[in-house]
Image 1 (cartoon, helix red, strand yellow):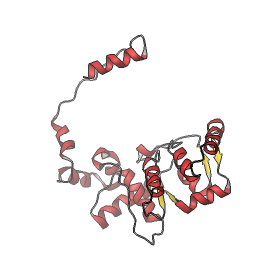
Image 2 (cartoon, rainbow, N blue to C red):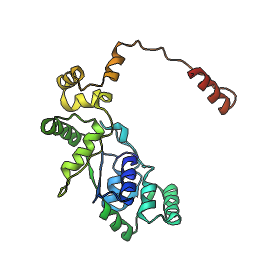
Image 3 (cartoon, helix red, strand yellow):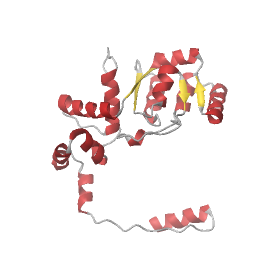
Image 4 (tube, rainbow, N blue to C red):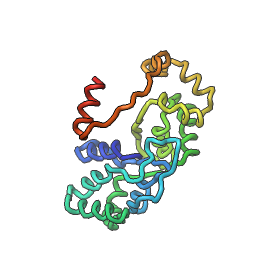
Length: 220
């Protein structure tokens, strides 16, 4: 889901010879990727939905252009025309032949917040693994689609970064147990004892380059 960085990387690896049958994309309610794969409709939605998997709240995934490039056998002129149409109209409907080819390689599932929470609970119950909400979307896609071969799921981040979403899915007690466990990253736990730094206001300089130089100097 999201900007499709993992999906594009996996597709490139498949093109280079990695023995992968299909690539399955899990997305949340911001489901342009699912609509592209299932219907051939790369159409920007008029609004973005707030979700518990907010890092993949994306209306137009920029890596889709890379996927189209390799899908078409690196036909840059065709992909250029597609993306120009998307830029002008916010809609690209794939020609049927290309849509069929995409479906031979990709599958997808739309996982809303309720399904994401259920996938997180199931992961903990069945595998003893607490995923972040975005990995839980991928797990939800796995649970929602038939599997006749072993699968590999891309985990995207540590759940320690998403206290609110994990607590919503599993409850405050589960979060507290995780926070107190050896599975909680020491680097994250060390932040609890640090003092918060006061926010610092930075005033822009006369040019962008001068602003960047001054900001870099202050950071260093």
